[in-house]
Image 1 (cartoon, each protein chain N blue to C red):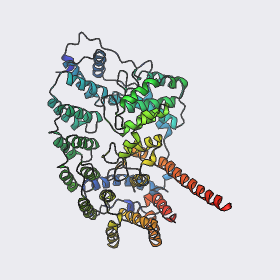
Image 2 (tube, rainbow over the protein chains, first blue to last red; image 1 turned 90 degrees about the horizontal axis):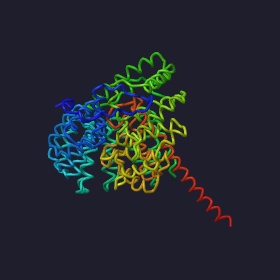
Image 3 (tube, chains in turn blue, cyan; image 1 turned 60 degrees about the vertical axis):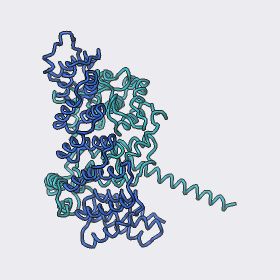
Image 4 (spheres, one colour; image 1 turned 45 degrees about the horizontal axis):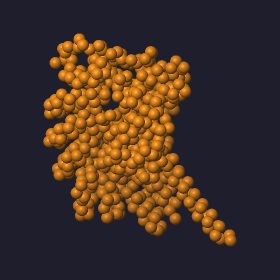
Length: 300
Length: 319
């Protein structure tokens, strides 16, 4: 039922008070102005009713980012003890049209928190991620669901699926790290070493893909391994004529570490690699590699 | 040295897909082709130096917008302060005179958005929101008159900030709203500008932000989330306001930020393997001046320490 069909005869709409000659005044659609006029009147007496609920739906239709209205809608839903599973359906429809709206995703979280039922959430976020595998809101919400309801067990296999589809999906790589390191069950050293090997395998598929490089370095940092476990990979790629600035950059890190321990030879190698990157293989980052060269040069 | 005037062909700057295409690399190639077609014309005509920022058009755009907006802008009806800030900021940056009349209208408009319980909402009768408040405070800063400054109720603003504060040091965006690092930045920036920073306000926040730094050196919206240009700016700027940048792994953040610059397009992406976008020229670009301050400060401290060592050495040996 449209909000217009309710009886509003007892309500005096309150006009919007922007003050005289306001900046950036929007030439509202008459339907929106009318709805907002009723909203201000209802909000004043804190009315929680069916007509108020329908009103919020209309306003949201015009402006899905109207956070005050979403907040009001939540209060009404809970006051009237509405079917929150229906609301989840409503949200699902809205998300299709507005997948990157903060208020929608937070609204779902508020509803699910109240329901204490996460059974639909895994497939809901999976559906959204099928459409856009990097939707930040979807990933944020998915992490909240996993943390809150302890749904850690299946996450690695979900990540696997996405990485198989697109090995360059940085969001999936981040989720892999999340599934392992934010898990209340801490990973074993053996598992971490397997993860490094996993990362190396994926690097080899497309050495210019930065995501697995970042991932592997992140895992190494949390393990007993050192970055030089990647030395062989980097040098092999170079010898095969495969130029990857990530491989060369990794060598700079390895050489820098050794230079700090006193190796003059590696200090020089590091400097040369920086020059190679700055002048030939990663020229957009010339100034960054020159800075790294400067740091290396300054090592006593 | 930019991209168009490099002494080698633009074609050399295409991203390598290692003969292994995925959706990400396909999208990237499409974007590169679009940009390449535009750049090529400029390179061939050698017309780089004729490209000018069209100040007059931008001033007109902002001035017209401040006068009034089409009904389609209803989607920003919960963001009036942002609209004011964006457009006034354009005029301010372009050195265009912000008239007394504009200032009066600005003060009047913003005053209608302040809530008695503290903070500013996106429109009259809207509850207060952290990002909207940040935009309102910035607008007031641009308007720059005593009348503008005086309209802020600092006492209620502070009380409202404290209501947004969470036990773990983070801030929600509005009553019953979502947590993320924007909250921390918007509250801290607004508090800094209105001289409302207290130990009570900032307790635990630096630690929470530190936890938002991801394994690749970037900063995400919350601990565990993917590093992202927009959130990275919020995080680093907030830490600088707090004076706690030493809690971050700065070299790693610096490297991550540098890695986001696109080799052909020249602009920045917001996350690895995603597309270039003009907004990240700000979010990621703005990281560098802050990083420079941090790194200079660290260097000066080192020099200071070396000087102290030297002084002590000399002191000991002169006796």
